[in-house]
Image (cartoon, rainbow, N blue to C red; front, side):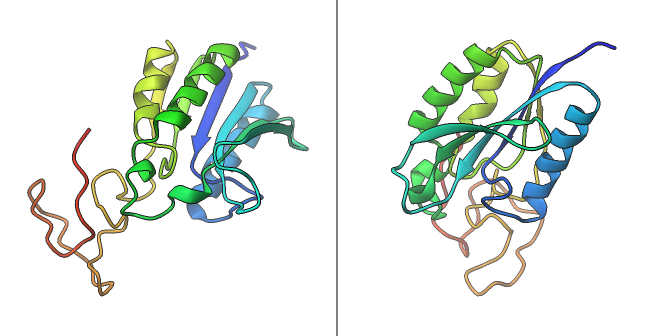
Length: 170
């Protein structure tokens, strides 16, 4: 069997943070590891006791290697580093150069930054993105206005006046 080196990327990851969007990359990583592939995860970590941008690596009980990076300060929707985080991108690029994956599968990227997609592609790996929410183009992430009411799914770029301040397109 051909073994691939696969990287899953997620803003949050179990056991640090558990939600529907974190369980998908977690289950994919474990499933690929069970099938004999070499699996790595690059994940944001939320913990006020860790300095921002601190990194460490662990191998979980399934043999999945996880690189954590502390991104606690940048969870606010209005924080520019929620969607573009040059320091995280630099760490991710250096880490990818060491891991040399065949495939990078990116999931939710809030606090890590959307530029990780370009970094993955420029690493030479086949690059896949799964969007788990509307973070990519909605300043409030879930297409809701300030009162929590759903927004229209049909809107022109930069016409949302009910959400948080819009962020410029990269």
